[in-house]
Length: 448
Ligand SMILES: [Ca+2]
Image 1: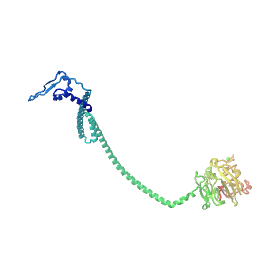
Image 2 (image 1 turned 90 degrees about the vertical axis):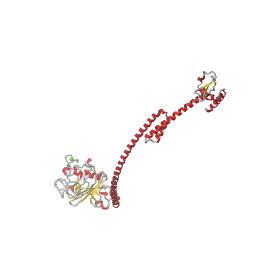
Image 3 (image 1 turned 60 degrees about the vertical axis):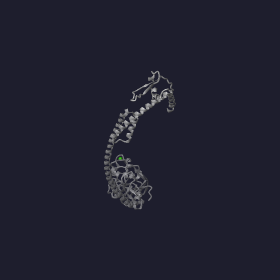
Image 4 (image 1 turned 90 degrees about the horizontal axis):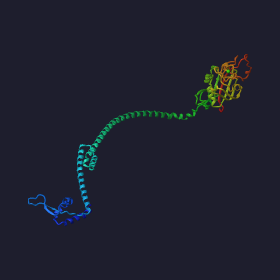
């Protein structure tokens, strides 16, 4: 702008020099002529007359009146006028801003003095708002400050509450620490006790478990007497066997000495101390004394014969001292659902085959359960025995135990192929009695 004004000012200086009047008067009224030209339009010629009050020495100021004059000004004069107006406007704005800034600063200082918790950030913020606001916005600045004070107050209260909560939590934490210490003491004591027990067990194990480690070799289930094959078991007696691990273990009498041993005895008659005239349930479960007369039990005989191919050996001795045997290479007794049906075959021996022809595939009958082939009655009832009766028998090893020959109904222990037995005619002749009977089984694959 100054670059544009420079030729204008030079032109004005030349104009004033050209006026044929006192230089002082022209200079003093220069701006007035320019700003108030309309007031001078009535003057027709140049006049010089006193103006204002005169002093003591009558020195009065004089006013010069110029005739109407039209001067053609270049268009840049509009820029000058505009520039002057803009300058005046800027000056006024600066003045107002300065005034507003002073008032705002005073208010901010007062606010700072009222609010002891005021922060420098807030003060700067307040002044920043004021510097951008006119004096009329001071009330809004106060509102902002009050709002911030309210927020500060709320934050202060929140902080107080938080502090109270922290104190409460601290108290609880102290209590928890106390409890934790107690629990730790209890746990430590328990762990110490357990450690002692474990150490004790460990020391015990170090001396005794060596034998236990080798124990599984001897804990294989003995399915029957033939599984007791080691030398220390070569003695007749009662042993435990588990033919089927899904069923119970039970005791049997093992003949470990006769004919290679390994025999599981399922029936024996030696003294007649035990009656064999028993019910279905008794034959099912077994009865008698394993060391004397007994029936092992149909369920147990079934278990013993179902998992292995078994050989049946029957030993007979009469009171005359005659000893014979009958051996069957196949012997199997079905379960109770099939009425303990007998399967046997493959006879060999000296007593004759009194069993297979009439008793193979026959069901078991007792006096309270008639499964025989005799339609008019119960063979079990008639002969006082439980057996695989047909119509009714050619052998009955569960008959009555007679200690000597007898007459009448042949209800004693009977083996129809025994020597000279065909000469016993009913009812005149005596019946032969048997001193001992043994039925024992062994796996077909058994090798002594
Ligand atoms: Ca019948």
